[in-house]
Length: 249
Length: 249
DNA sequence: GCAACTTTGTGCGTGCCTTCACAAGCGACT
DNA sequence: AGTCGCTTGTGAAGGCACGCACAAAGTTGC
Image 1: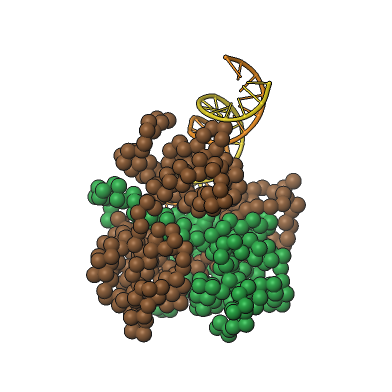
Image 2: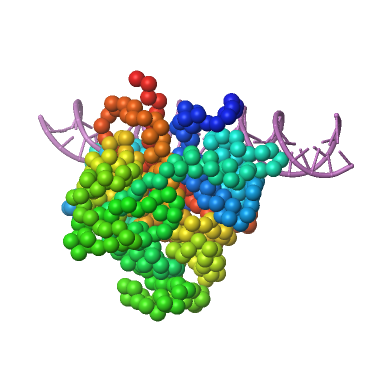
């Protein structure tokens, strides 16, 4: 393909961004974290085979994923970790901090507010909201909980670009509308409802009950199948879409 | 196709289970929850168009999903909600309670232990584990936290079939091995690591940091694209691809 | 400088998932 | 009974993603 002659100009970067498959984006984030760990351990370079094994994906798939963001590997050697991390962060938009607002400071919301995995990775939780008068006003990790009706004002003041909804189901759509009207264009939804949003807003849903039900399905399947559990190879790996390709020796 | 003459015998059910696409299983769980809400509102039947709109999927896809579990619709009318719910629950393995063990009662784990969405849907959290001496012994929702080393014994006693891991990353693999050695065959992993498991064990991963990074990517994309935001069609809808499952992927 | 080895980048076949479009089936109304 | 309108179930086509396999490109050793 046309090689990127020097640096990715903004145009080139934009063109690339648009064309990265959704499935690859999800994996790029996983590669990035693993690369961070490797860097901490002092590694300078890593091969696609090593990184693939560590993240549980096929090496060819990994190389193809990385090829979407440019040619940052050295044939015969591998990938230079520092450069790759920098480029991944640029691609994933992690070169800026993204202020996050969290609505719903109940059971789950409280845990999310205290989760260190966010702030440490460029997503400082900057605003907390709830409707419960007993919760409004308390501090969590140094952030004061505000009333939901303040969402537009506070989000504008603090430049919030990502919203997380951890309210009970019935409240979620209303909260979502408030966030959208405040200019938030990306939402992570933990409430068990399907949010209706304008087309320019991106919603991702994390549904814990559904995750368990999917597992329950597999429990039932294994149960019904008895345990044929053929004497296949011994290990590996994460993730559902295990082809379970035709058995039949 | 060959219609199920009377009831799905276990054989027929087993054959169907094996052939349901993974992506469809995830959606079936969503349909089931929405059907429950509709039933509460007093609805008797629902058409594929209505249910599809409510769950944010394509009507044809919904019908195909439902066709995997049998022909429970009435042409010209729609689906009888009660019968469909019953069949979905059977298919997803929700006709039995599935005891769940939760390992890691820190920030996130504590919230999960108290999350009512599990017990209310057939997944009673039956055992809690941690290594922290300050946590071992305390009660959460009436369950006492045990030491991780008790996992094999307690899981066997209480018939645990699903494990949830909400530990810090470095501890996750060890905990996973313990669960697997205790007979747990399905694991929901919240720790930011890729678990290595035998092939007969099913792992689903929920990775909150990755979810946010995917959103950040879309923030960056929207930003770079300016707001051309073409005059495309007007609406819609949740969900990128999941794969995931979500997270999952 | 050359040969052997290593590892990337990718063209291509394959299979799964999605979506369209339509025939078949069911109820209601006349 | 017959017709009309509505909705399901599915065949078939298109698109996307995965993974193999190999050429290109770099490094190491002599």
